[in-house]
Image (spheres, rainbow, N blue to C red):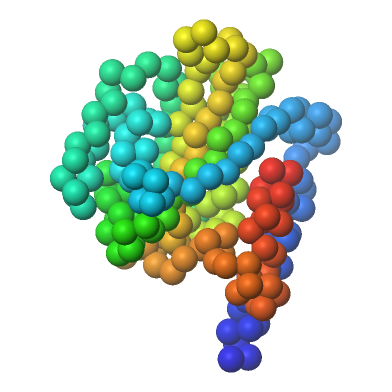
Length: 219
């Protein structure tokens, strides 16, 4: 029990220190540019309770054709326009190369959950300033995704979308999907800390979900 509590405290320290560590990587003179990088961030679950699947959501956001092995439904969004870039990032030092395959990753996420109302992924939507170049927007989105992967030990799949239709021509944004479980060499493991109930988090000296989201928005 003592070792488990020590482990919880270490994770709490890592979560609270993530922002400070990211700031230390900023070179002198770049502070203003970094503050500009992400100016909007919202978070929502992808849940079976609302009729959604991780496979279908990933296919739509990345404009791909993916088949959900759980129900046999094929989601084909290859004709979708406006997806400028998509990429899967893993925690630094991870050996989970299997998770770089989008179909394998999100089918594993579906297979890991048994409940009919299970949360199968967590999505963040981030705004990317139109003042940035395409390369700078990619760097900002990739940095955000990598920070999530490192914080939670999860696989993170992001797609950058260009403004579309009659929407604001400045509305560059990225959809960022994160697994609800930690990713490892042999598959998905235990739930990430952001998926835990607040009562459990507080009892283990860990920040609540809202506190974690606030820290993520500030990163």
